[in-house]
Image (cartoon, rainbow, N blue to C red; front, side, top):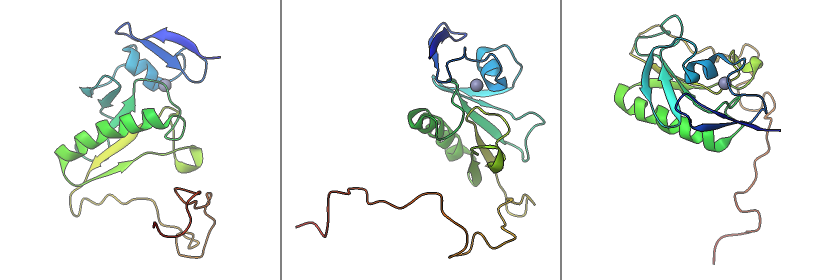
Length: 160
Ligand SMILES: [Zn+2]
């Protein structure tokens, strides 16, 4: 059962998990203002903060929704709003990586959606850890967890 709580501005937040927002989530505590963070920008629905430890490059930020959402797949509307805010920042920094993770196997460490914006410069030495030792990234290797579907399954053949 979902519960309604108010954030630090008195607005009502809905916890999708049914627990009060922020009881055990470090990012909810930041949103509530009960945990420290360097907030770089605030939108109605999201915050941009400096990662603990300062990040991997100068300008590395985390963009997180003010509503507790465990990951990118939990609530597409919240994810889209968070990505909109990230895109605004990306337009200001130039070359960058925009990365979010879902689940422990994908290296997600805080179960509250967050998007890393990592400004990049040529030769900065930051390597993405996406090399597959067993060739899983090559065509024909590995298994895709989804099946491609037509966008309009009722349509067949070219338009008339
Ligand atoms: Zn949270």
